[in-house]
Structures are given as structure tokens and as C-alpha cells.
Amino acid sequence: MKQDIVKVLKPQADRPRGQLCVDLGLPVVADDNTLIAELLRAVVFASTANGHPVGHEVMLDRTMEVLVACSEGNQADLRRTAFEIAVMLAALGDLTRSFDGGWGSGDTFTVDRHARGRYLISGTPIRELRVQRSHIEAHGGLRILTATTGGLPLRSVEDWAGPATEPLDQWTSSALNSDGMTTVADNLLAAADFTFYRPDAAAAAAQDAHRWTGTHPALNGRFLTRIVHYPAPDRFAIADLNDGTLRGHRLINYDAAQRLLFGVDSIHSRCASLRIAKTPADATITVGRALPHREMRLLTALASRASSTRWVISLDDLSHAEAVLQELGLSTTESGHSARHTGSLDAGSQPLTSRSQSDRKRRK
Image (cartoon, rainbow, N blue to C red; front, side, top):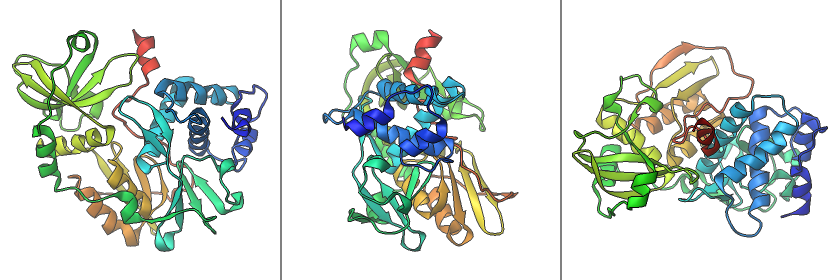
């Protein structure tokens, strides 16, 4: 661990919130989401100096130790927000997330957004970057370089977002029906909680939490599956059911699971909620759940402000943003005008794992 970062991350009961912001290289008036995002980068950076990822719960525990020491906010809400922001940072590439729930720091580079300025994508904390702090504007999970890149690598938006997939319905069918299924170990079957994503079993407007169900004898075929096995982090798989019995499964990563949510929704005509609110200068796009990495990055590249499910985009770029969302089966509808948004955008996401492992432990 870098001693400088270790000192910053040491909980201090008498440290004012503004001082923590300054210690992290942020303005003293940085909003909550900006503070939490930079704190997460610092925690993961310091915790992975030995080259090994930091566990999910350890990352959140260390983040909360620092936050609680200088915040009067509800601890459960703070922890939930920290997890949601971590999911966003992983989607953007600031953090990495492994199959087994480990977290690491992302590569250091900048994304050239042409006339919109450059985003700094890196798990490296601001105070560890060789960039003048006055040249970095932090907004929630985003850090924008306003001047020199400090010699950091530069990537295009297209390279950052990654290649396009095949049309959503084709990709979904291929993901669900491809080979590679393995038998589920008896000890996992006995200890874990398997739930299956079935939007057709819920009301059309139901939130994601109500679209996951247990099994029953009438279930046959392939399903997106969530495997809850405390204390391990939630995992996701394609499951093969025969008369309600789990015959096999194939583990998939978080991003593939996120894309499958949209694909399965499209098949059953149960798309996630979407709102567009316009002002004379821009539009705020709000989606009911976090996007897959590619679409998340494409929308963020267009945005002046962004959270995990909300983007403020100029009217000139709105048609481009709508085209990105349509690739996920989302139809954009205007919801009227709203006052111009000048404050921070809340995290607002509905990640696949909507509560932390320790939250579940407390419920048992």
C-alpha cells in the first residue's frame, strides 16, 4: 500500500467531510457521489497493491469505515450507494470486477470525446496521478481532464466502448442456447439460493426485484439465473431446467448478465422503464436499470453529467443516444420538460445484486 493513501484512508472521527474531500484531491464542496467514487478508487488502489483483488465485502467495509467517521448519513443507504457507484465505475473501466467478486483498479488512460473534452478512466486516485489537480473536474463517477493529459494514453470512444454485438434478440438466443453446460455440484444445490429471471411472470411495469422467481415443476428450458451463496458474492449463470429441476448451468460474467436482462425483456415485451425530460438546452435520460458496459460507455461519452442510470445530454446528441438505447430494445418517449439540473445526479441504479452480502446476513 502507498503510505500516502493509507494515511488518507485511516478513519478519523474528528475529520470534517470537507477535509476528507481535500485529502482525496477533490474540491472541499464535492457532492456525495463524487466523494464516494473517489474514495472507492482510493480503497481499491490501496487494497490491491500486492497484485491481488480485494473482496467485495472488504472493499465496502473499508469504504464505510472512512465515510461513517465523517458522515451522519444512514449507513445502510451509504453502503448501497457505494455499491451502486462501484458498479458504475466497473462499467466505465475505473474498476475491474472478477467472476468471484474480487475488485481491482482499472488501467490508466483518457478517452477523447472530441469537442466534449476528455474523460480520465483509471482506478488510480487523483492524488496519485501525475496530472495537475486543477486540470481535473470530478462529477460523480466521472473525472474530466480540462487541459493536458499529462502523457497518459489516449483512446477513442469506439475503442473504449468495444465492438458492437449482433442484434439483441440474436445475441440473447445464442447466449441462452450455446453449449458448455455443466452439472451443478450437490453441495452448491443444497446451500445456494437459485432464482430465475422471468419478466413474463410479473406485471409489465414491475421492477427488476419482482421479476426473479424460484423454480416450480412447470419450468422448462434455459433461464438467466442468479446464485446467492453467502458469504460468496452473487454469481450469474444460464440454467437448464427440466420440469423445474436444475439439470445444468454455465456461469457468465456480470456484463453478460446485464445484457441478458434487456434481451429477455425484449423477447417478452417487458422492457425497462425509460424517461426523457427536455429543457431548452439539453435532455436528461433516465433508465430503470444500469446498462451493459458498451451502451453505458457510449451514452457517457455523449454526456455532460452522468450517473449509473441517468445522463444529461445536449439536444444535438439526443438522436445518437436514442439509437444506442434502441439497440437494447428500449423505445424512447419524451416525458415533458423539467427544470435545468444543476446539482449532482444520484446513483439511482438497480444493479443485479441490489443489496450487499452483509445486508443479507443481517436479514437471516
